Image 1 (tube, rainbow, N blue to C red):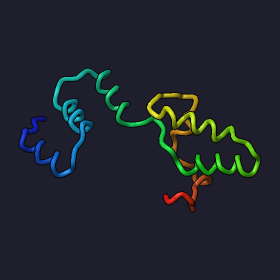
Image 2: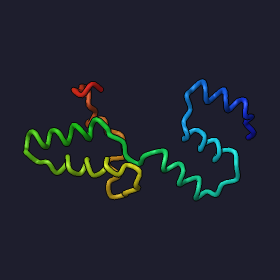
Image 3: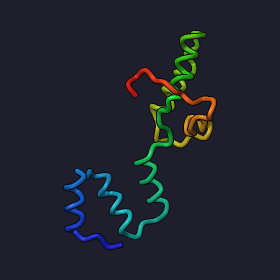
Length: 108
């Protein structure tokens, strides 16, 4: 894949592209080992993202049972979102149908 300097300049201007985009182009253009490519992808894409059903579960536990453990665990997960932690995979998956949050109160 060959991308001209002019195309890169136009794209950068059009989308206010940051260093991450330039790094991605570098990875896409050159011969890079799978290990380097995987590390770059992991640095740009967190393993864990905040999901409404996880927040709702932590809030419900805190309010209804005075149980702050789910909140503390969620805080721990989100404080290191780029680390692969298989034991916390439940925080990386979407909500099951019965966990769907239909109304939020945080402006989301």
